[in-house]
Length: 235
Image 1 (cartoon, rainbow, N blue to C red):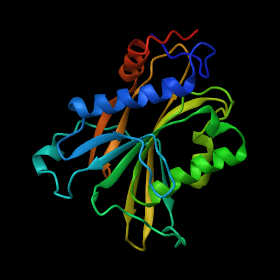
Image 2 (image 1 turned 90 degrees about the horizontal axis):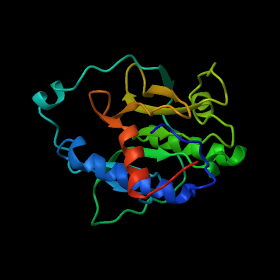
Image 3 (image 1 turned 60 degrees about the horizontal axis):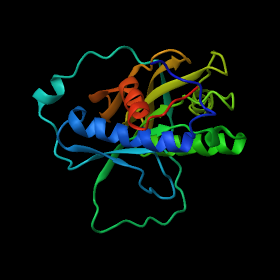
Image 4 (image 1 turned 180 degrees about the horizontal axis):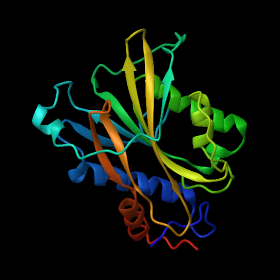
């Protein structure tokens, strides 16, 4: 079953969005994520609420055998270089009972994320904040209305130009690569695919440890599983 038009008059997006998050968590925890990682639904991160968190149970490195078993990954769509993040006045409050380290997030773009310049700016700044903190970010954008490609403002904030159709929707994965040579900076590599109504969703890499370890996320199967589990019948 191909991708439907979203928002959809027959299916409330909020309901489908939340259900899709649950399906992604179940899918990743079933047999996709390697040992030492776990997926969880939304948690609060200093006022930022990504849809899906990828957490590492410990800082113990994977063995060379586990990392070397990675499949071949194609060339990145593009690479950006960011300066080190500016110091921000903030109060960090952390639970003494939860020392898990966030390594990646998955965001499902909602119509409200595109509802005006301020909403778009908030979403983009959240993504950039996470990347600057070394957290890898996947953005799933299947929302056709409002007609705003979320990838374009993200690339603009990275200092890059998007020459494509501003109304085209995308799914994209961003890999955060901190570097200290010749001076502290951050590289962000992007893997992106266009998506269209009546077409299948692509597989997308979700990075776990820089660009040395990742898993491929089957977006199409989780989308279809959500439709079936919720008995959703989009027009």
